[in-house]
Length: 452
Image (cartoon, one colour):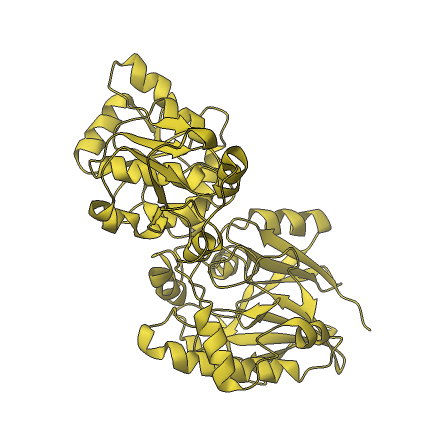
């Protein structure tokens, strides 16, 4: 089998992989890179490569594409589906079109399903297929969701996805499969550590490729769909028009205590990115807790508004550039800045704070609200626990039972976010469980309930 020099660039937070392909002549191609180009640029510089091509398999809903940025700043040629009708300079490809990469060739394969205009890109060395960039079509052990366009088109796209996977399955068994969406992606990839595969392995192990017929495939795929962040509804169109080109890296502007107070009075929202224990001890009343970690971007896009100014409250040892980039790659350009001096400056100015109790698994003695995803809740939860997914909580805060109330998730980060939303809605006497259902079962010796 021919070998190629390809490096996956994994975004653990979004559950995605971009790819950098060294073309062997001082040039490179990147596939499905986000607007956060730090890692791909660092890798290209280290190898002395110029990024000559940027291929996008589809109009991404979960991040802003970096292809237009590369085109504007480095003269990179953008390769994308002609059916996507992008409004910026690109080479529009249709099914079976090929691009000469200089020794290697890239063939476009129409694989609609995840989106209408979805392309997979087959990499050929001579006439031999080496691997296929499957984007949101064939995934490791699954296929990407088909409900991001509209509810009315979900089933039709699922049937298109069936045909697309069957087409890909006709490739030779030794062809590598390089998907964009992987474990942790809200675009529907099952848990697991494998992010690449082969056609042969997927034919053997992927349950969707082993479905008895098209109807069975559609039933299985649609039955696996969970919720997704609301910003998914916006980014596809932004990517079609072309994300704004950045003239400098995003950064957090400094804001004084007085400026923060004025902004909050005008409707801005404080987003506190400190760890759970810090937020629990003291925070600005009404602040939303979204701890800075790899999945920060997804939960920012789920819990914080995109059309109101956001004020970041961080700890001094947390990287402001990381916060700014995570917000930027999901289209959150509404960061007003950060509170200079953090919460210490706020308290030094003698402005009020509030706190949220933390309880251990053996201290749960009141009503419980479990805010995990539905499949997590169904797999095992505390007996009698009420369930509202975190992503729905802001709209359903009035449905939550009265206090006292213990809020829980799997570890505590999401639960603290939920508690902060409930506090903003007027709930009091809340506590957050430091741990998850398994910790409670171990601490108490009681069994978990299953099902919904």
